[in-house]
Image (cartoon, rainbow, N blue to C red):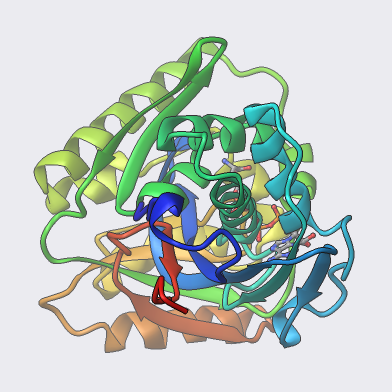
Length: 319
Ligand SMILES: Nc1ncnc2c1ncn2[C@@H]1O[C@H](COP(=O)(O)OP(=O)(O)O)[C@@H](O)[C@H]1O
Ligand SMILES: N[C@@H](CCOP(=O)(O)O)C(=O)O
């Protein structure tokens, strides 16, 4: 995260905060593993006497243009953690992250808002505190951690704090996402999960999640397909995402290194080797959508290494 000391810039200067999309879980890493993707939520913040919240662009149609906006509420979370009131500002919000598709739009909004609130206050919170505020608000750290730090993040939230390890993406690991043209809210997709699991399911999940984290950390791309097996959430969510079961079973035949529901869905993520063409995989994913009467987009994306960035306009002190 790039932080510019407010002491170096005038207190009323405009700044921008850019937070990326994320794909959480990656199969068995439910609520604990995620990666960052280069689609962004951007805030343009200008300190002024009265607060204004301005969602811009078609992606944010229907989100509130007032203090109830999730981004503005997130700015206040930073102020509350710092124990200070939030200074008023004009906050313009734009996003490239499709809402309610399992690509972490709410995490990007939350992180961007907390970082912007922190900037307005002169950065009283360090990055670990920003992450902890966000993870407690979201209830799980798997989207907010990669949205803040970029790359791939393994994280856990407990009473003492949010603990994490950030991994640089392994060489040659690329992502292909199938983003269907329908929304599925995270709360709806969490409501279908069972309250309890058997010991066998727990052992299956923790052994696969541990193998996946280890494989990603040493670049063992050959293990991804095996390590990404999951019975904790995908099997329960499959009825909400037509075509998911087919893709999980067969994507490797079309070049995928592994496949998973992205976050709570309905986006599906496949890993690919960036040295290999992905045309066959795209054709397959489009055919799954067509068979299920769906439309949507298939995109190849790199893993975003940077995470959230803050930029201040260069303003000469003499002005
Ligand atoms: N930039 C934003 N500004 C305001 N609200 C947002 C923004 N991004 C996301 N949200 C809120 O988050 C909701 C989607 O969150 P969620 O169901 O968790 O899906 P996901 O995070 O996978 O996109 C949206 O319906 C909207 O209420
Ligand atoms: N671990 C969460 C992740 C939700 O991600 P989102 O991008 O769908 O908000 C879950 O699986 O519920």
